[in-house]
Amino acid sequence: MTNSSLDVLKPVLSKHGLDAVAFVPGSNFRRIFRRDFHLMERPLVIIVPASGDPVAIVPNLEMASFSAIDFPGPVFDWRDETGYRDAFRQAAEALPHLAGSSRFGLEAQRMRVFEQMALGEVFPDVKFVDAHQAISSIRLIKTADEIALLKEAIRISEAALEATLQEVRVGQSETEIESILLRQLFAHGADGLSFEPIVAAGDNSAQPHAKARPDYHIKAGDSLLIDFGASWRGYNADITRTFFVQEVSEFDRAFYETVLAANERGKSVTKAGITASHVDDSVQKVLESSQFAQFARHKTGHGLGLDVHEAPQIMRGNNAALEPGMVFTVEPGLYRIGECGVRIEDDVVVTEDGIECLTNFPRELRLVGLG
Image (cartoon, rainbow, N blue to C red; front, side):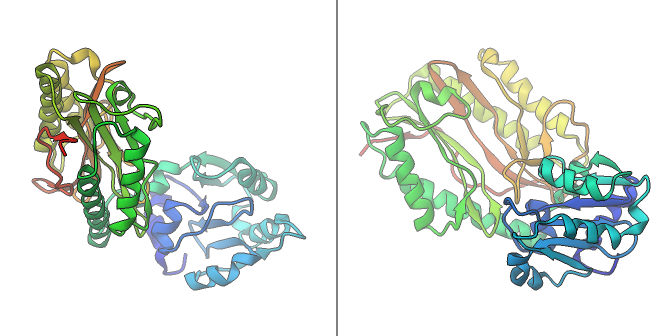
């Protein structure tokens, strides 16, 4: 392999005993090349062998954009009228040492079946293996530049949330509040959305992945859960805060404070060297030792970066040790189905002796809709 940005894959190939990996446009592609391409009906596939030059199979209409990558190996383009099979055949001919019983790692959670089938036609004797986690490991440790981009996405998100809360009024529908949030996100500089926001009040907030309802109008005493994030130059914020409309019962206050205690515990125990399982176990024990144990429904968190959900998964059973530079969410929640849900989510980066919390939006219980 020539000296290039693709060198980041060398340890992956060596560690996992792979003779080659293949990947398509997506977060790993963007991390390597610092450019984004659409995943569409026209296959664009990069093949990186353990030895020798990589090859690329690229739709001809993308060649002008692809040339900006300064790809360090041969590029085989194809046109709609002729189809892509000849380009795959030419790529295989450029990699004759892979023709035998090679181990070929694929981005199994990203690559489509038709792309694997096209590879299988020209590499009939190779063994395809799921190397998605191995390939994605290049994104586990964030650089200072990546963390700066995440901080900007979070800054935009938090400013938009505060501006949205200033407009919340009793009687608004969930979709009205969602539309305010979307407007504020772009007004404050977002260049995209991390995901479709969750704006859920009352009983809807007890659905962890709720959809905003046009026909439910918030009323005093409702919980109002907002889970959202701005995207900035490809990097994603993921923040959840739960509020109460005008007033809160003592029972719901205790419910909220339990989630807040679990959130704080998760952040306080996190540091380099402990396992993801230990973080989740510490958080879950706060919930499980409370009077609300039956309402806990999910793990503590997930990695965050170019994907909203990526490694590491912060859950019991994941005994991978945390390392400085890993970024993930701490988002405990409790959900009383048909009544109320509370989730408090922060984005953190692991340091040698703890964390830096990237989210700054206040976590104390807050009443909204007072205007």
